[in-house]
Image (tube, protein in one colour):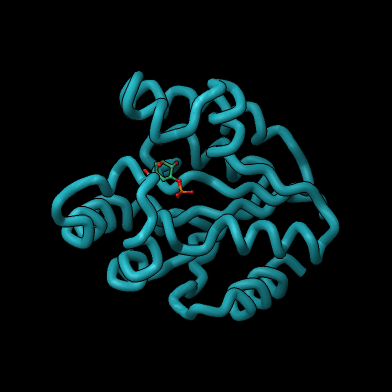
Length: 167
Ligand code: S3P
């Protein structure tokens, strides 16, 4: 596999599980931008947001994206907000095929409502917040090379579709 497979989409769209499974089936390395940010900073993401703020996190995320975009033949699991900095997607596309895992705000909410570690959703109205962020980000996510339906609870559909597209 020459090109990278890059997964983008809202938190809860299944990027990490799908990335892990693709890596297993294709026997290639999987890289997570969130994990690399945490490793570099020695802090969890919600702690970075709290102590240093979102802009600091986004800078780190962009540094990581620039660095890993030179890799080849790996699966890249991106944080949900990676599309917010306009330089990130062109970097990721340079050596990669970008897949947007699309799931509706309602599906996303159901998947993540019990998780306490999402800094952007620590609000009294998480579904409203998801809907708002979703609308803002949709045009950015749609700049992916392919849109994959990730609303189903099973990851098999998205996996098969992605594998078909890269063949
Ligand atoms: C974020 C999504 C998170 C993480 C951070 C910000 C976002 O990644 O990068 O909390 O802005 O949507 P996941 O999509 O992997 O949860």
